[in-house]
Picture: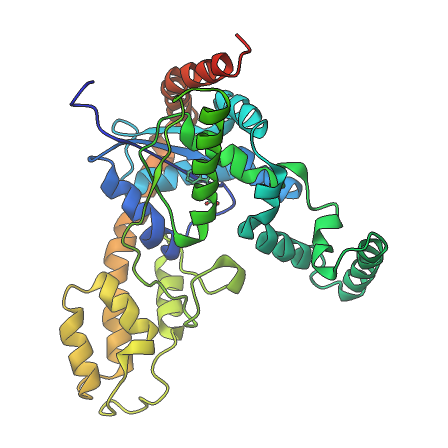
Length: 363
Ligand code: TRP
């Protein structure tokens, strides 16, 4: 055993569009911090993007490039970590296929993320066409009823419920198990997927009398609260995001629009920082946020001045990131970085996939 060997961390992100500050504080900042402590593999989950967005496939290549530049501008370093594109490492598909042989469909149908996201996709597809939606619902409902099933299965009977989407956790398990990941940094929403990964590893090992696949542990990282400008969770679907590289003008406009304590109208009204979006951002960008909260509570600062200072603090960080990103976009050979990462990933993943084939009796 090589004692200098660090634990492996694997994490992926789907190339579905530009990143926002919720992604940064929730995920990417932790990735950056993990680089020195672990052997990290960060990949662009392009196959995963297809499982829920085959209709948007024309954006994947461009989004992949943009995402890698975003990562690098934030401080992820291809010298320290391995970055690659999932579809460049075919072993992910190979191990997913093998894991599919030991994964009961019932596990996948029970997966709460599958059920929730399917409903969500179904709604989105028919957004703005409620008539059609009703019709589609009517038809599938009839089919479901004819089959003696309840209305909850409506979406399941639609053509959006593709095999690859049901199999999302199988591919994700392969992503993780190929690299002997000790830990997987995930948010609470991804926990069912990690549980499935552990179940699949155990079942594979049991079926094939091996200890090849290592069960990973979840790594719950520190995730601060990042509200959107309207006070709800920051999310693309709510249209309340601030981009990681937001330009100075729209950053200013967005901070000015931020939801504040509705009871604080005049400067000397006593404020309630708890529900205030501006305060939540001071916590992230202002080292003296505690003093600011006290001033707010005591009615010693107005929301206008508080926002003005926040704009300055945020622009200082975001402006620097913007400059760095522009430099990288002009100089980095993104395809070259991904090709090099894929070669490093393949060196590990291909061996594991071959060992899995051997364990399964194919070789
Ligand atoms: N499921 C993750 C997401 O939706 C992306 C992902 C795919 C992933 N494979 C992974 C994350 C493996 C961690 C490890 O964001």
